[in-house]
Amino acid sequence: MTYNDLFTVIDDYFLKEEALARVRAFVSSQRQVEGWFKGELLLLLKSLRDQNQFEDWRSEYRTPDIGEKRIDFYVNLTDGPLYIE
Image (cartoon, rainbow, N blue to C red; front, side, top):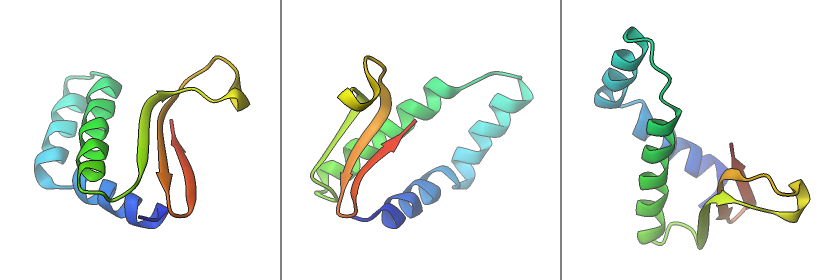
């Protein structure tokens, strides 16, 4: 899976009407929902890995390049590593 493939899948997942209805409800109640988004993305990435769409992914990923901080998601794609924050 390439970067473009993954972003297309993410767009398709989050831009479905049922997902957008959730976002509209969060917005109308003035709630920040980063945790919901990260949870949904975690489920999507797990599902894609279970389908062998890519070799490896991790959440709360640490890399020596940034010290002790964590990156929300790391995905090992055919184009190389992708970091999602």
